[in-house]
Image (cartoon, rainbow, N blue to C red; front, top):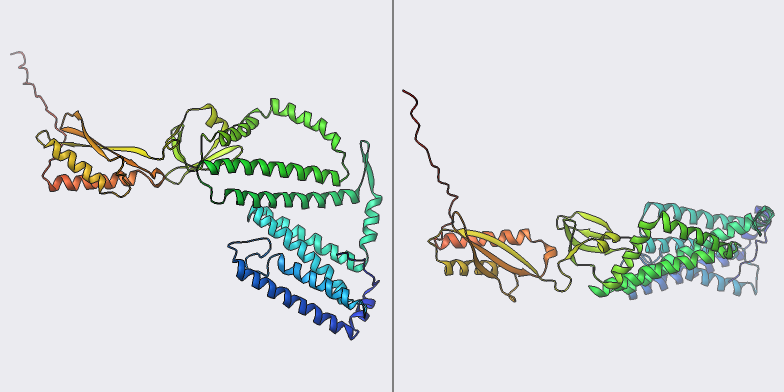
Length: 427
């Protein structure tokens, strides 16, 4: 669809065109197109029932891109038909307004899907709105071509390339549009790749999505620079400078990025694994290109550089097998029945649903303590991310109750104090 420049020179001409009786036909046609667009969007929303926010349907149907886009198509078709009998004025202006609304909705929804609700997204939304509506005002007033010609007169040279203020502005707008589109495409592809994935597949797909996002951003940046009239061959010098900078000042940063891709490719650490790094133990919740997020069972999150996970000793508790072995100890009196104590300890562990039956728990006499016989109860659990302290507490309480019920004594600490007789002093 191509919009011709505004053909009305001043507001009097606009008012004269709007006061014609045929303007009521245009208003009615525009309203009818809006109703048809709303009906189609409502039917689509009921059919797809998309959860969350989407680019086409938004959250409530009419706040997405599909509604103004359909309205724009209907208005363009209506203007084409009415031009056979009359000269449309309202539809001509409405097309520009609807086109601006489509651009605003598209930019806002794409940003929301790509990066979520962050503070700087609000600033970008307002910038997109001001640019779109400002363009409509300039186009409707007939000043757009004049402004563009004036901007084209402001020129300067960058090396062998001549750049004008108009090409710089158009290149900036193109760069913004291409980068937003790249972010949206990478977010959509990442959501598709990570859908239904778990374990090793999740880590591998995460690596593919990170690489794809970086590639799309690089391609978008190159296209934006090319559209701004910048010679891309000049970037070879910049690439060499960046290489030198990476070799000297950005060694750690580059090492972290390389280590991140190595981790994701080798799958030595996967999202969901329980690991211990430098006395910090927790579950891997996210693996990024530069760092890995580890969440402890207490809710604390640690951001660990990927280089540390490659060069340091890391204990992966669930690398080959998600089952974890845990123990608890208890001491009983020396005159206790050893077989009975072992049976009671095993039954106390089996009473907890989280304790695995295969392999079964086991109780063993591990030491002859100073105060009594020391038993160690060992058991397996498959969900260490749900916490081990609470499970150990439940098992200990069940052991205490069972031992008391069967009359098994848990001895108090005993100490023998020797008192030396007083030495008589010199008479």
